[in-house]
Length: 294
Image 1 (cartoon, rainbow, N blue to C red):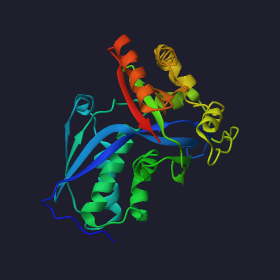
Image 2: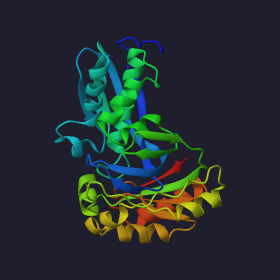
Image 3: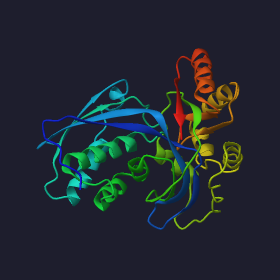
């Protein structure tokens, strides 16, 4: 059991961007949820969340992405806190402050990462272990990507998001590019148009312990099934792919999640930084970040 944090201490957590290196949609269940198989890695860029423990649950927004969330009816941070409070009698909540740095509706799991960070902060404030089943239950109740973000390390995500298998992946330099076009996940799945009960071909087994080159070769065979419908909704993704593909050392270019962020993998962070500088210089209107994945 962890030690409960004093109520006058501000707690801080990172909410790193989630990147889907692969994303296979294996089918749609009778309850409407989609069964997924996705290799997930986390980036060195993300949002920031703080918590001042107290009696009243509240959320303040700041940072470059705050305006995009200002009209949101119920932020995932608050939903996660309420979900955990429903399972933990007497849970201490408090005042959250979210510094929103990631683009919204971008396929980077920003809202899910924020919710997971909120759960980690509440665990610290209440002396809960991160392995507490009530945290995992609250994560899944908040959103399908939240359990993976709660785990926060490279993993294979299965089911509708509840099945997490840790993976040891090599580290890559990476560039994330969002053309500042929001793509709603619901719209992408609607365009995918799988009827309840539909089953599709299973994903190939991931190469455990593969070398960098072996992993890249396998990744090229396992696509993101949501990329075609996302491209139909946001044709600018073609231009983003072309810009990333033209950079020196790009080993793989793909869309993350339901879009509209594309990523490129590089052998190291120096190559990624040079590529990001080139893309940002040619497209100053895009959100461009170099980072590390793994």
